[in-house]
Every structure is written in structure tokens, then in C-alpha cells.
Image 1 (cartoon, one colour):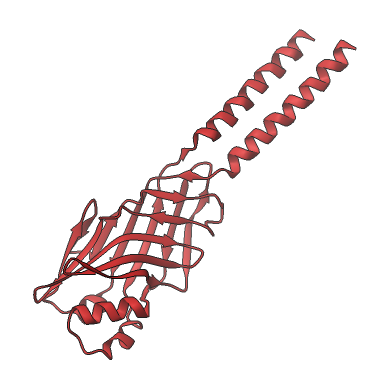
Image 2: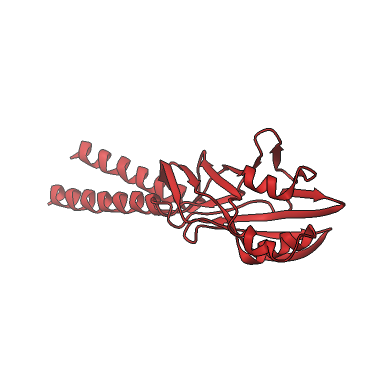
Length: 226
């Protein structure tokens, strides 16, 4: 009778452990990332040689490679296919374009892989003029398996194009003819690379994993006692 009771308890604990590990596998993680926006030569040619590019906040900009590098403050990796990946940068980080005394700040960037869209806040001479979808793409390549458990993944977008609202704001900011807005939406703005480097589990995930380990230890002790 005691042996049967031990077996039942062991089975129940094993099921609890399996449930705990399954929950940990499906949990969301906030993972530090390197988010790199590379501007195309098509864009820099459109804006002209007199335009300067300056990083804002925690971002850095490399003039030689035309790359803006930022850290996403949070990344949702709850889906192993990265279908629901959402990355957010700091509200004051981004890129400043300056030409003929006019500044255009691109800040508060967020990327939504489900929509394949990058949103941002656009401010002209310090005054917000646009907030919403900034760039869109038709293709995304996953160069590394996304894992919510390990916090790994490498995502690269195809050519990014300006949304109509963002194009209108950009053209107006730099005093270009209004018909340029329609042309600007067809210009290759560049591409975005999101490299997930590490994951930090939520406290609840640690608790579930700890409960599972305790269960394993208890099962082992009961079996030795039997």
C-alpha cells in the first residue's frame, strides 16, 4: 500500500514538474538586443550631401557605414517563430537629421514583426509633427532560431520604405516639393537588424523552475526510501 502511495505521489510530482517546465518554455522574456538601422545610399542621396546625421540619447551613429545602433529596452519573445516579436527603444534615443538649419528627430522607435513595421516619433525643430508607423517592409529573414527560453535570435528586414505620413513629414521638414512625398515612399530607406543576445526570465518563471527542481528532488528521495 505504501509502495502504491509512493508511486502515485511520484507520478503527481512528475506531472507537476512537466507542467512547470512547459510553462517556463512558453513564458515571455525581456532580452537585451542590438538593433541596427542601416541607412541606404538611396536615402542619403535624396537628402543631399549637406545633411548631417547625429545620434540621440543612448544611440550611436557610424557615418562611414551609415548605421544607427540602439538597444531595445524590451523585446517580447513569447513566440518561438518570432511572429509576435515587439522591440522598444528608449523614448529619447534615435537619430537627428540636420540640413539648412532644420532638424528632424526620429525617436521612440519600436518594431513590430507581426506588422513588419517600425514606428517612431518625428519632431521638426523640437516640435512633434508625426507619431506612428514610420517604416514598413515586405520581407523578414530569420538567421538564427528564436528561443523564448534562451533569449536568442537574429532578425533582418528587407528594404524599409517610408509610410505616407512619415514621407510627408520628412519632405515638408526639409522644404522639398510636396510631390516628393509620393516618390519618397518608394525609396529604399535601408534595413533593420535585431540581434537578441541574452534572456532574463520573469520572476514567475524562476519560481516555476524552482518548484520543478524541488519536485524532482522529492521524487528522487521517495524512490530511494522505497
